[in-house]
Length: 74
Image 1 (cartoon, one colour):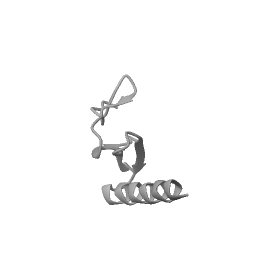
Image 2 (tube, rainbow, N blue to C red):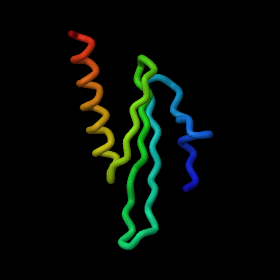
Image 3 (cartoon, helix red, strand yellow):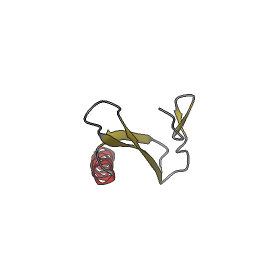
Image 4 (cartoon, rainbow, N blue to C red):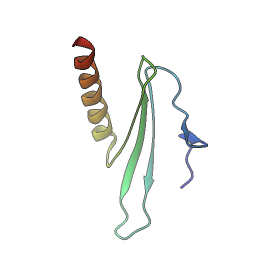
């Protein structure tokens, strides 16, 4: 699979507070399409996921951010 999201296995999402995503599909029947999603948080940590839709990716990111915020408050 050709991708612009990684170079030598390293995410190209380097700017804090930004996201990158791309659609890809498996060649198996039936063909399923997924979104590869990276988000670089403002503190520099990277969140990555693969889900069927961009909305699901962003929901998972938001859940991750809420969990991080709770851990900081402890």
